[in-house]
Image 1 (cartoon, rainbow, N blue to C red):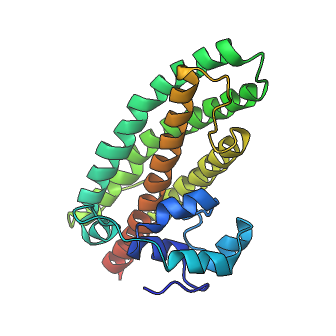
Image 2 (tube, rainbow, N blue to C red):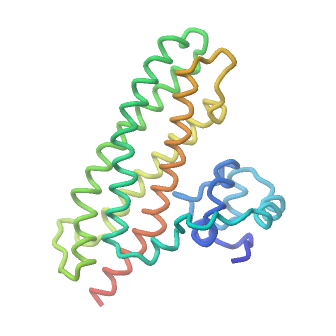
Length: 238
């Protein structure tokens, strides 16, 4: 795919996974904002679209053997859900408590010299508080319904159409995206201050990894799983 300013960001990432890290460096939203054109995304991120197009033309493709996002666009929805839960949900369940401990240590050791950490801590707590019930709703309500459809069964639900819980999940994704954006801003893109200790480095490295994982996690749901689930339900009801 040749990148053009009217190309949707989500489509570009699907075809060229190497763009993910580049977009993250520029603050271009490809997960919640994957429906926007590249031109719109550049404007929102205050990036020069001509420079972005020039850079995209020089990006190297991923190494051989690296899984492609297109694999998930072709996989069964059951397999995609299993991947999301096993890879991204389990990562959050393991990582969020670890980061909470690191945050507490850094706040106690550096909070007086770095008052900006108070807001960083608040943002992290809000993020964790949003994410845990979100995972439960997906695993107990949305994902079982999609699995039923994928297995050719008549899905039973209390929400009428799959679009209803999807709208709720995507609104919650938007909220998470906003918290991540402010975390990046408040931490100076996770730049550890000169007097930062090893724990400070571990915290910011962990927050950066969390951001990247959540971006991919939300992309797989918003741009791959949800549209395919809506299309499958429409086909069944036709």
